[in-house]
Amino acid sequence: MSNNFLRYSDIIKDDHPNLRLKSEPVRIPLSQEDLDTLIKMNQYLEHSQDIEFCAANNIRPGVGLAAPQLNIQKQMFVIFASNEDGEEFHYGIINPKILSHSEELTFLPTGEGCLSVDRIIQGFVHRPRRIRFRAYFYDFGENKLFEAESRLEGYLAIVFQHEYDHLQGILFYDRINKENPFYIPKNSTPIEFSTEDEELEDDSSK
Image 1 (spheres, rainbow, N blue to C red):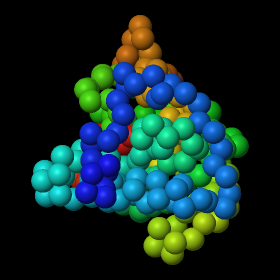
Image 2: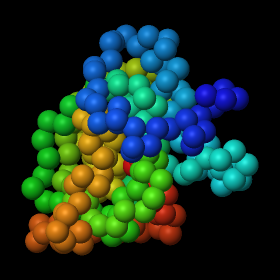
Image 3: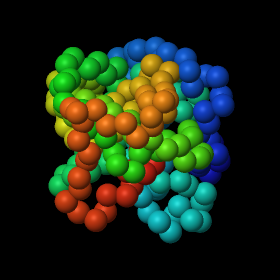
């Protein structure tokens, strides 16, 4: 991982068989190695939302990155994203467990993208609009680890579930209807952003 920060080339792509492995729980308290992995994933996401840095350092934008995408089969990922109203969610997530979810579904009308998938795959990915989960959270600003139960909805719920899938060896296109990629169930409605800076959704590795 050159120059002490991750590049797009450090992220394994979907032809790598290890992306299909299920990840193991992370031992708590965090080891220095696991903390370093979280920090590197976070730095990648922060760098990736700087357009000039991306252009100069071969960084592809993203709002989420999971340890399996670095060929590390551990249950942790980082999300650095904002919801439809611009409210930020920025945490490391360790050993997450989804406790419940809504019957109502939602999807990105532009489709999902992934840092491990270097091509456009068309089709809708329908996911529960609301989720309730428990996890260890790592606050990068406070350098603090804490366990909590939380809820997410809309776009942030999509990003969370996308990353959660990586821990199960699942990629977003596994969830696209093979016979009708643009099928919309009656209980699914699209995400609608209230601001114009929505398009980092494209690579929400989400």
